[in-house]
Amino acid sequence: MWQGGREVRVVQLCTMIAESSAYYRLQNALKQKGIESMVYTGECNQDLADIEVLQYSVWNKLKKNFLTPVIRKWIEVRYKKEKRMPFSLSFISGTIPYSKIIAEADIIHLHWICGFLSPKMIKKLCELKKTVVWTCHDSWPFTGGCHVRYNCSKYQRQCEKCPILGSEYKNDLSTFIFLNKKKQLTNLPITFIAPSNWMKQNIEKSALFGNNKCYVIPNT
Image (cartoon, rainbow, N blue to C red; front, side, top):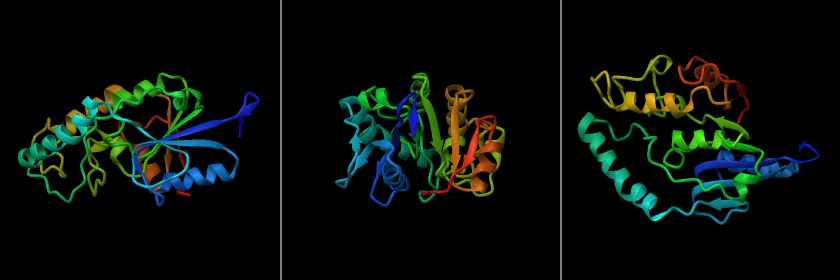
């Protein structure tokens, strides 16, 4: 893959990575095709090639290791949330330094980035005027915090009274997260990748990204 007479460089961003991850399989597939690609991640517990692990600042370590668990406990008490139901915040994240990897990349590929990239940080990446694509491995990118929606369709209008939280409040935590995503991410030139036709339909119906380009590319 070439652009302007040189090879295109890809950087993939994800919260954590393992050899079995869909994004690491994609990493290997790109390399087999001769495309230069690196993974920038918040956590990697294996010795994998072409992986750059973010070095968190002291403040971001405190937020990640202490503040986040406190907020999660508050959510469980405030909303009587069932622990088995996945629900992630979006306003606590590491700060992605604009390193040589980011600066030299032509394509920034977002994957599962909860707790690693906040909507505000994604917006800053888009301001670098590079091609940004985002693969939706679950529903979190276009909801107010849940990863699995079950039969809830509120993401098509505005999240509120979140069934995952067990909430009866019109303006609950899901509303706050949804509106923050709307403020930071709508109208940005992000191209979405759906691993299935079903996910593509969900993205196109969403209030946040219904106007963005979306393509179906199954996991490698």
